Length: 154
Ligand SMILES: [Zn+2]
Image 1: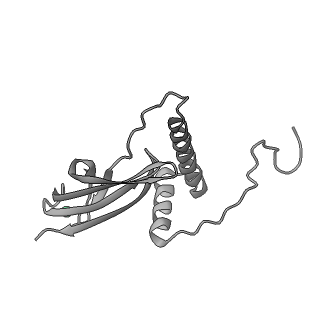
Image 2: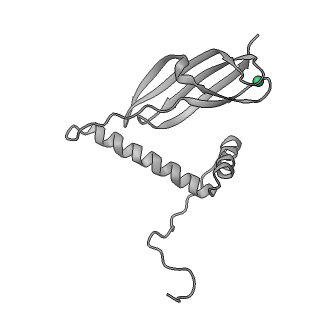
Image 3: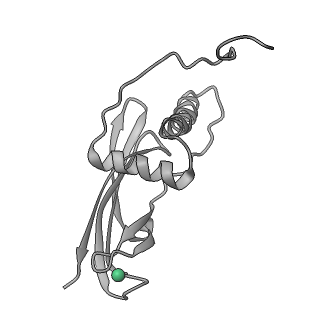
């Protein structure tokens, strides 16, 4: 096919969106792009695909004529940086749960998973710190937002 110009593709990317990011989000995007070697646009598309799959599953689960499929809860595993030395520590915040707060929304429950880990020990400097906050899940199985505080222990 010795045509001129760009080859014809079936899934032309003709739709454009401008997305505003704050500094923290922009840093996350740059970090993921660098770490994975994927372009930033691809990271957005991948995240969208994953979200779409979840929305479809939630939709099906809410319709009684279909067999429901149990959805895994959102992961609460995080890399937490030590407030003393900055070393990354992997912590499963689910193990420090202090309870859930549920609100009904358009597509079922929105759940705030609260946690309080007051004896996290840095794997590098061995000092103890505290991690508190909540991770919000909506719809089921999908990440919505989070607020995590890291404090030095006295
Ligand atoms: Zn440390």
